[in-house]
Image (tube, rainbow, N blue to C red; front, side, top):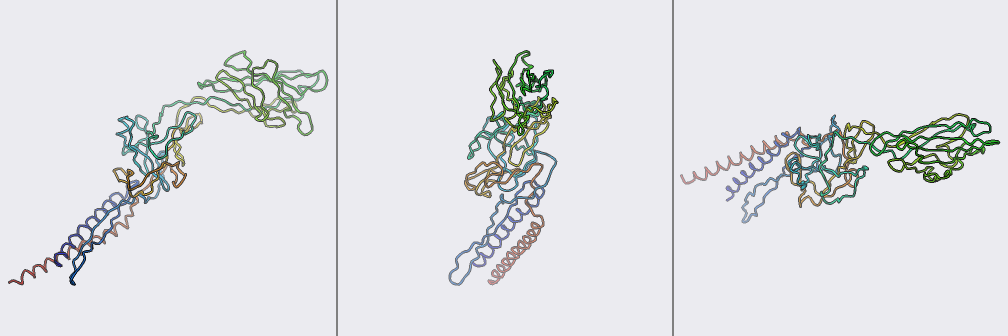
Length: 436
């Protein structure tokens, strides 16, 4: 019985070391595979209770585990949509074959790195066929509230590389100096004109014409102007008319003292808290910021020069998409040749209690399981998760030097177990020879 148990233990040793050699071979074969998680093999002894002073060898059993929670070093690349996770968290992806079916039921897989590029249909797809998932943004670039304990809100990220985009102008800020000498007695009373371009809801260029007409007094100085606004989209139609009064005091000279609606004006009333008025252009309301009372950041009246020193506006003309990038918080930004940037998706990071409990699949992808625990979708950089690094890939977690050392140990252990079997064979032969 004891000799037989020795033979069985030797066989078990051969099998266990063969298993360890298989995991080492897998690790070395994938030493250059991006995102690969090394497999670790552990040995557990099997003990059989001994009685009567005899001992029976129980042998050994090998167990393997893929160490998904181990991360490899990050390396930089030249592709903006090469992504890697720095810290906890995993990227949600779907199989490209499921996305192409288009039944809306995409199984969420997880990975820690990927090289994504747009395919013929605009999907962000890796060379291994994985499609990046994210939450779609609204037209204004905000991300709605999605459930965080399910993948139901995630969609395959699809980029329309031929997309045109523009933003309508909703706000104009005026920094203009009006000549104080024009409101004095015997001045010429010449109207000063300027025009500010804006972009309507269809990206068409229009303009708001602004005329400043001084009030010429009979005596002294009036420090008063009439501001008239017209819209090029509706020629000849006045969209706002206001009477501007300026300070001439020692401490606040040249700043606005008051803004009043002209008689019959169709424009909105001046708001002293915001320093702006609301007028209606052809495409909708337009906010005109002329500065606050007593402030010098808007309309002023000093000296004898008419100077539009600072005129700004929001909005942009229609432009072509030029590139797409993902920031550290997972927001996918589309860049246009007009200089504007739009947020079109957000990629969350998925976190689980036990990464090593997930089911390992091909292409460095993993599936949550009961052993891994329930997952939660975090904003990258929030909670326990790390951030997303663009222009980067995660290298294999394999340490080749360590694996080669383990291979030598495994080879020696295998040879020793084979020697045990050879020794047991010789002992059994001696036992057989007793009868002779």
